[in-house]
Length: 159
Length: 316
Image 1: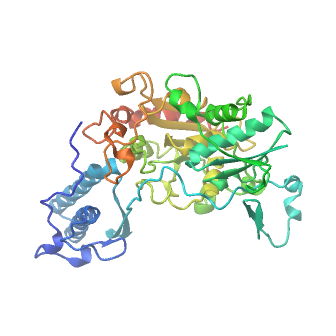
Image 2: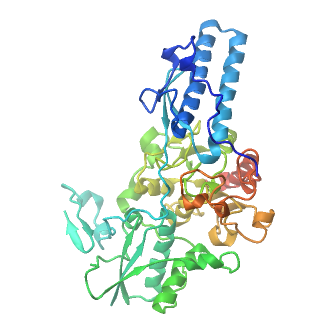
Image 3: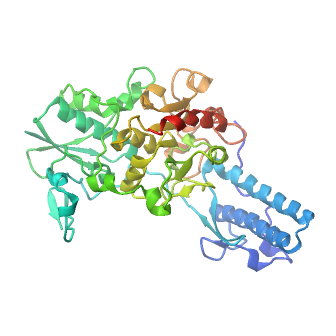
């Protein structure tokens, strides 16, 4: 079986720690500022990897828009490939960032932090809904007036 | 009349199978039982004519946890999932229920059937569409196909098929380009209505394939609702597949599913302390790309070709 390293790389460099960092191109994380670069939380470190990849795409996209140069297009292409590589790497565990765009720029990433899977669903307080025989024979045109829903659970009705 | 409350807290796909058992119980023994249910998915029972409100505190009511132990014979015995709850009821209640239809029993109200499709309501687009579920829950990740492959199917069929992507919020459903996005936007009833109007369903082994069979057809539809299931080698074909579905499987093609489904849970450990992370629950043959070998063997071209069989037929 291949060895899947699903931990963020120890060599990962947070772009916020680089001198050329441009905050305007760095996406939000779940609509909030990104976790601290020094976080040791594995989920947060994975988020930082995605944020950095999208940041690189934003930077490259902005340069392409500004210069239209083939060289910058190549940089953008490489940034998109790097982003896809990260998405592929984490696909077996279903971890990904869902981007929110603003024009051509990625402004926010939404990450799911799955709960521990539940083999059994939580018990519902509702039992079921029942059909009322004959109701569907009444023409829709005659079903006028306010709608009242009555639910019943465990033998009791609740308006 | 014997009064039964049937209980089950499993996932929606399982509950769809329970609806079949309740239907067939009443067909086998008309007038003998009053039945009510307590399940994880009340929405699947809306409009169901076989339910009667019963009180668990009523001493004349028998409450009954439903199971499908038949699954443990699924690799050897010629049974479908639809037999699962039925055989358990037969064993526990000394009955002789038989399946009467090869599908679950989902009911829509006249109002639900008369409304335009959710796609039409959301986009105004009147074209026929297919429902696509390109992911699943985090419990059985071994059922997942690769997001790039789902996307390749959508891309290859972009001029022929309008896809409506569905998926529960919090589950793994990476966004697809070029689809109508219903992820996290549907209730279970919305999903049923979405399937009701759909020309077909494309999914892994999951709730949606059971709904494709169980949700009734619109009156004008002559042919069964199409469904292409990207299944791999986890489940025995005869246990899951429906007659009109295209069930893409690899049973018999790999050592790990040589004579039946492997019934493993995950491709790689998620590290969430779930018992599904234990070594005996993990895929035995994972490709370098991170897919179970059996899922890797199913190509996007194969899915496109299979789905395309239905593109002319679904005009009806």
